[in-house]
Length: 229
Image: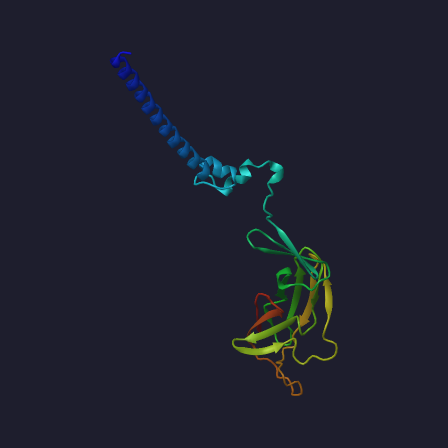
């Protein structure tokens, strides 16, 4: 065999072996990188395992669930209490629904008083009309006895007379107030002073200007100004 031919064949063999070795090395590097990526996982893998990314938050869940799987938050909750049903709104405002026959609250009642005159000559007794009206939605009950429903007469800072002074006998009286139907009482002042001492003689009030006001628990009427001659 020609020595030159042998050397050419040997060189070619070495050349292809080196090329094969380099190719295998590159394939091994690619395989290692691919394995590392599959082990750590990308954003798609995170979403498949139930995780979230910066672009996808749990708030987006109701938008992709079927309507049957989305439960809307309740805007009202009801907590019953004895004699009164109470609903709490989303803003926390309490709304009470009263039952017929319960005791009236001040917010259900309007108290007013009207004098039958503004000037009373000597010997004429002042007269007043008291009116208590239920403006609520249902019937309620109220104490309208003389101790609870009072007319007080003053002259400046001087407390002159009260309808609740020196009363005796049965003083409590509960009345049923239908909605819009007023309770009416007429009251007459005998022009004498009153006070806690019920045994002493009552002194006649002097001529002058007086103010009458009706009172009830949590309620007060407008002033009625009048004059005694």
